[in-house]
Image (spheres, rainbow, N blue to C red):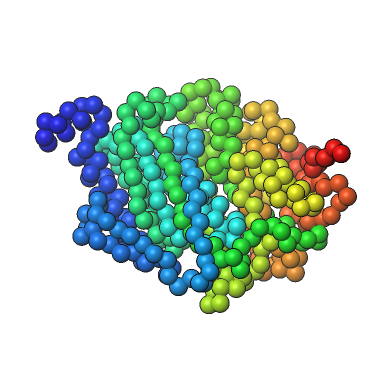
Length: 388
C-alpha cells in the first residue's frame, strides 16, 4: 500500500478494501445483466468494476415512458443489524422503490443502490462479511424478480454514519433507485374507480419499512433504550426486522407486462403502496377524497403480532396505528368485483396472500370507514369540508 493510501486508511477510508468490495459488487451486477427480456446492457468495462457500462430498453410498447424512483431503508437499518438479518437486508429499499413504480401500473427493470457506511472493514472481518451478504441479497432479489442489478456505490464515511446502537456490527445508510417503464395505455391513476368495485388487500407479515421509528420507540419503551442488547428483546427485534414482502412481479404480471400484447390480465384501477402515511394519507386523502369517493374496509388482514405488541407498548390508538402503519396489508388494489377470485388465485401463484378487504362506495360526504383489526373499533376519516 502506498504511503498516501496508508494515511487515508488511518483516517478511516481504506481504498484497497473499498476497491475489493466494489469489484465484488460489480461482479454481482454483471451476473444479472441478462435477467430482464426488456433490458440490454452494453459492457465496455473489460471486467473492471470502474469501466463503462450502458443500457437501453428493448421489446416494450413503442409509446412507453421511463420512470425512476429513489427511496431507502430508513431507520430499519438499526433493526436489521440488531437482528443480524443481512441475508435479507435489500428487501426494504427494493420494496420501497419498485412499489412506487408498480402502484402506477409500471414495470421495475433496473436497480441502482448507494451504501454509506462507517467502515466496510477488511475482507474476512465480520462487518465486511455482513456487507457482502447484503449485496448478495440484492442479486438474489434481482434474479428472482427479473431485475437488473445495474450499478452500486459504496462509501466509507467515518464520523458521519453512526447508529443509536454503539455496539452495532454494521453502521450504515442504504438507499437505491429503481428505473422502470410506464405504458400510457395501462397506467393506473385511480381516475376510473367506481362505486361497487372491490378493494383487495395483499398481506404483509412484518412492519415493512413504514413507521419504523414508532416501532423502535415501542421497543425502547418496553425493553429500555438499549433494547438491542437485551436478550429478552431478541424475539421482538427479530419480528420487527422481518423483511418486506415484494408484490411487484405479481402486480406487473397482472397489468400485462409479460403478456404478448401487453394487455392487463386482471385490470387494477388503483394500487396503493401503504408506506409513509398508510391508509388515511395514501388511500383516503390522496386518491378517494379528491375524486368524491368513499370506501368501507371491513375485512382487512389482522396486524402482525409485533405490530400489535408495539401498539400496546407505545400506547397507540387504533387511529394512530392505521395512520402510522400498514396494519397487515402492504398494498390495496381496486378491481372489478367479478375478478376477485382470479386476483386471489394469481396472487397465490406468486406466494402472496390476498383477500377482499372492502368496497368502494359513493356517499354525499366522502368518508373512509375502517373496521379496526387492533380492537374492533370502527374508524372513520372524512374528506375536509370546503367552506364557501
